[in-house]
Structure formats: structure tokens, C-alpha cells
Length: 290
Image (tube, rainbow, N blue to C red):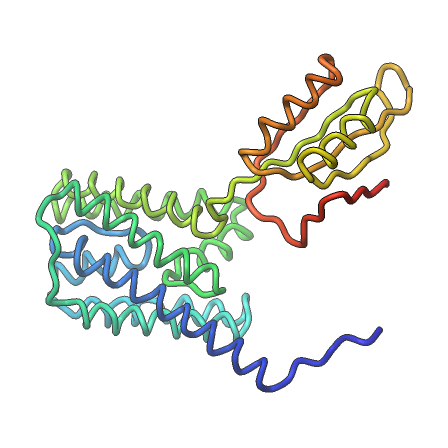
């Protein structure tokens, strides 16, 4: 069947929706920077962190510095990651610069610990929303992608090395206490970004190997309406064919699954893995055999 063509209206709505979320995420990040971090001389990592140090020293506008310092990385991204990513990132960074100037006169707290924790949480939320909508607020990841191919290092290692230098400079300029608070902020923001990107719905994928696989699977379907899939496998030692049950369940359903498995086969083998994202529908009373 030929693929359905996307209408101009659908494309326009998709673009508007994406731009709104990019602006929303950038404004949240700007709120965290200006209302929590900047007034307490706590910095972020990457280009934003460099801009914050330079703004502290030179008194230049922070939003303008972030925009200007990101331009070389955007030029690099144009050849490596495409014009759409560059446009979305430029738009998000511009919204961040505007947001910083809007929130410039606001100041929430002088408590360093509160500023660190809540600043990190709010900043991570904003950055996560931007990343989820295929934009970026920081050019260091673009640079890291290029350098990783040249020097054989991972992107994470290059970003970490880059941020170590930034926080060392922050210690020299702002004091070592502020540098340590900055590292804590970065760690909190990093974890929150993961939550925003992966979601709080920590589902579990479960694989069950049992001689009573069909009985267990049918019980899960009938009693709890959990969708299961039967997979065929061969035992490594016995060389005998085995039937595996595969299903994705919530944390609440996991306890029920364990109880059913133990009830039918106390010697059954179970493998449980975290699942961050799932797509498609879950249909009760539905079995796939592969």
C-alpha cells in the first residue's frame, strides 16, 4: 500500500507544536539559570557554563554570550547533523537568550543548597524538553561527536573532560565551594534530563523459561489480561526445544507475574529488564507465536 501523504496543514501543525515545545523548554531552562543559579554564582556545564563565567568576569549579557558562543558549533553541526537540527537548535538557543533577559530581574533564593537542587531540577527539565523535541541548548555535544571520531574517545568521555576544565576554571574564578555546588547542579540536571527523555513509566520486560510456559501464559492472559508472546528456543546444554514467554508489564503487574510463575513452576527461570519506552497497543487476550 502506498504511504499516506502528509498534508500541508498537518506539517504546519507539527512544526508549530515542535517550536512551541522548544520555546517552552528553553524558557524553563532560562528560568532556572536566572532565578536560581546566576544570582548564586552556580554554573552549568558546557557552553552555558563558559558563558556564565565570562559574563561574571566581563559583565556582558549572558543570553548574548550563550548565543554567540554556540554559533561555531552550529556551523559545525550544519555539515554533520543537517539543516533541520541546526534551525531547531538556533531557535532554541535564541529562545533561551530571550528568556534569560526576561527573567533577569527575578531572584528566588539565596540558599545555596536550595538553589543547587531546584535549579538543577528545573534546568534538567527544560533541557530535557528541548532534547526530546530534537533541539539543543549546548554546542559541546556537537563538538564531542566530531572529536570522538577523530580521537577514538567516546562522546561521554570528551564531554566529561570538557566539563572538568570548566568547573576547574569556575573554582579559580568563583571559589571552590561554588564549583562543587555547580558539579552537584550538573549531576541533578543530568539525572532529570534522563527522566524527561525516558519517562517515569518504568515498565519491565519479562522473559520466562518454563516447561509449563503455555499454562503460565494462559493464566496471565485470563486472570490479569497481560499480553504475552511465545518464543521458541533451544537449551544450550540439553539441546531440547524450549518455549519462552515474553511480556512487558508495569511495576504493579510484575508482582502478579511472579506469583503466577511460582504457582505453576517453582523452578522456572525469569529474566527482568527495565524498559524506558514502549510503542504500540497492549491487547488483552492476545497471543503471538514466533
